[in-house]
Length: 502
Ligand SMILES: *[C@@H]1O[C@H](CO)[C@@H](O)[C@H](O)[C@H]1NC(C)=O
Ligand SMILES: *[C@@H]1O[C@H](CO)[C@@H](O)[C@H](O)[C@H]1NC(C)=O
Ligand SMILES: *[C@@H]1O[C@H](CO)[C@@H](O)[C@H](O)[C@H]1NC(C)=O
Image 1 (cartoon, rainbow, N blue to C red):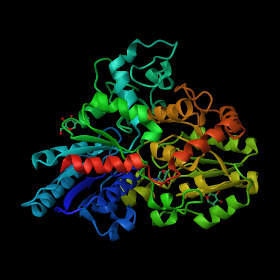
Image 2 (tube, rainbow, N blue to C red):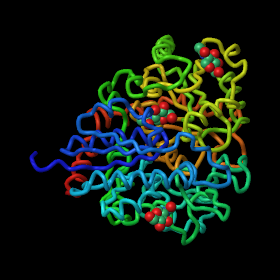
Image 3 (cartoon, helix red, strand yellow):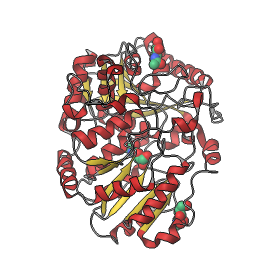
Image 4 (cartoon, protein in one colour):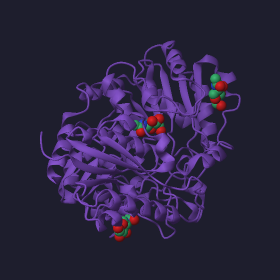
């Protein structure tokens, strides 16, 4: 290719759902004659995929951060980012790294997770072009914007409101506009952690009240102001009309660069993925081999996989209903229970080891469940090899909160989804899955944010999903867009990005 090798900075956000996609993006960018510099706070350096450390054109730079960052006070702090003091320390670390390292030649650009908005001024000051990266899908970003433009406050109970420029199936419903985080009522007044995935408008108490109100910008418009381009963890095959919509509206290049799944996934398309290499050092009480052996003993498409990811989940009471539903369905299941599950507040994993071990006390415990279901259920405490489970032929459905990462993993494995969204963007992801692609169902009754989800709803949902041949057929068909590996449209986007900036 010739020419000088360019340096590109990548600044991920701290959550696990953000680190991994950023790390994969780093690898993709590095294949275009670029050196990627992955900037992380030092306390996270053990949580990134190990192959990043050995990659010839990727450098991992650890910025000193105090490991003893206290979990933020429930009423202040910008969750999930640990408080202003932490920002200040990290910010200084990044600045001094930049001035040490780039005395003469500037980096070509910085790819910044939109949730790192607080660090934007550092790169602006250094005159480094900023490319904003969304680990979430195009649908949430586009729907928020469209809702803002359409003044959703005018929407009544019926019918759903078509949003100009967006597919009919993504029409905004009354409940979309009235929605609050499902967990909000439980968290109580001002304690609601509205930051969520940075979605939607803020109420006077700072909580997330669903789409922005009249005349109120969506958060991402602020966060991407002055950016050169937007990168989104999606691809044409999944969200083409939504990407096109954003390109028109944002008035800057918008590139779909996903799905940013681990390299092991692309290498084992069509067979069971082995997750362990890309996910070092996670605590769990079953090995990947044990999980696969258990799945091997079950008939094809017979197992429902239940997991809410590491950042959000149902309430304690809803976990009880879920346990009773799993007993009652008589279907085989794998249920992953994260440490601290059912407890309100931000995930402890963001605040270092000490908060992690504190959070293990008092999470949901499925007391006596194992005895009641016997070998029909596998209950995993801690981390689960999600891609192995989703890609296993015995798995026939996924009860999921529809976090974007989990949504893409399910789609890429051809596993239909039973959607139980908890907060902002997850409702839009669920709409994409259920209404646009028809590869899943909603848990019945989920649209009412004030009602908790009941055992009967969950049983209905599981039966609906597992017994629906049509949905299974469509999920298999949609998976076909990844038969050739990492999408060529996304590879072309990364190439175009590198060319655009140089
Ligand atoms: C993002 O950062 C800019 C300054 O760099 C600030 O003006 C803006 O308010 C921030 N936006 C959000 C949503 O935090
Ligand atoms: C996606 O989320 C699941 C559940 O939180 C986690 O197990 C998995 O490692 C994540 N994958 C990526 C690529 O971040
Ligand atoms: C793993 O943890 C779950 C939930 O606490 C428990 O039901 C199960 O028996 C544990 N399995 C093993 C092998 O320790």
